[in-house]
Length: 140
Length: 413
Image (cartoon, rainbow over all chains, first blue to last red; front, side, top):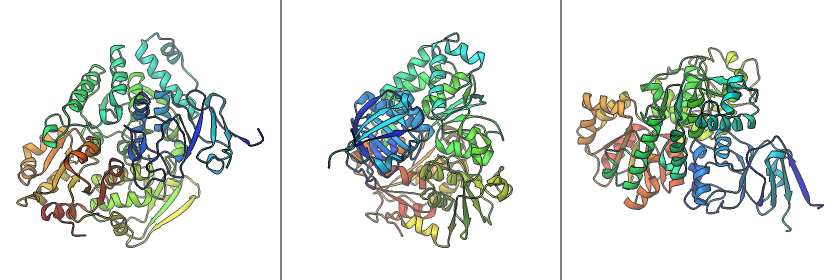
């Protein structure tokens, strides 16, 4: 596994998961950016506009906007429109609260910076209890 | 987190299952942010509405009530996705009303005051300097922190309820004195004039300082803002920047001087608001068509003073037949506006005055599809930021321009 990169930080929220990364250089809010009934980015100015988060590990800069996401992640999980997990450079309380309620994997403050390492399509093994994310680069 | 004997008893289930679940949820969040312990709170404010909750979160709240959960500090509710009296006039689905009524019953069983307002600091009780609270709705939090000098993080619905049941919250973020100090200096070379200019200022700052953990310090102010203006500034900063705190040198209580606001630290960077910047904020919102489908005065709910001003602007000036004019306030201000005749003036002009709700919560995507709405004009910088996610073309303009466009059926600029 010569092409595996390990990101380390503090323990996150939720269980270990693995899946494909969907990377954004914008922030994230379930209310501001998503059609939560479909799991598709509905904000036209977002760099992931039109893309589906369902089953993906989202990688974002930071949390945007207000308090709705504290509820919305559980609702989306029940509807089958939630992401598999979320990684931020820096999360805010709302994202942590929403992830804790939904038991959805959430991590932040990782080294090295996930946005400098991870690209959409890479395979991520997200291990919140261990405070670790393993990145397997997609062969390009 | 370091727990007291009382907290260990709660976790062991000695006070019931609802409060045990509440504390366990709070510990997960506290651990994530490295909180050392809990701090007692004086009040909670809970965001709970079906648009973001859906039935799964409604079921979670109902279960907390079934398990015997009961608030132990005064707790108010945020706006909802329907006005229970006017949902039909707006063309909303009856199912949405049924779910909101179910939610109201559950909240009342939990002991929550369902005042359905995002301006609790104006109409219920302003927080006091230095007290710890657990409030949700970002606009309420930033007002509590910055204007009143109370202490709160953004507490979303589930953890605001948890805090109301346990009477405490994890001590991290804005409960800590060092987090409240300024990080970014904003120098004003242009002064905000109208109330919506304060929203424009919040937009201008929040677009450049977009991080919950940053605290802008605004210096160079030559005017004294009203509470409604601070409300617009805070709501806009919280929306564009996800910010929970600001300092206005010479105005807000933890910023009597610029040195106090920064607590001896050096600003990480300095932004300068040059003349013309506020106009440029308005013009960054371009209409696809000159006729707005909707003109909305909302987000936050209007104060009684704002309702009076709108009633006066609309007196004798009927709204254009192709434009829907919507205003939201809370039930308390609605009752006052009824008594004072403002509701009658607004309704006579053709406006719809909604209570206990806020437009972006009101199934906005479904309303757009049903009525063919696309271009929305508003004097709320916050609404203009949120509403594109629901498929709208937002246009942010000053209040008088919004009224003018609603009456003429065409945007002057």
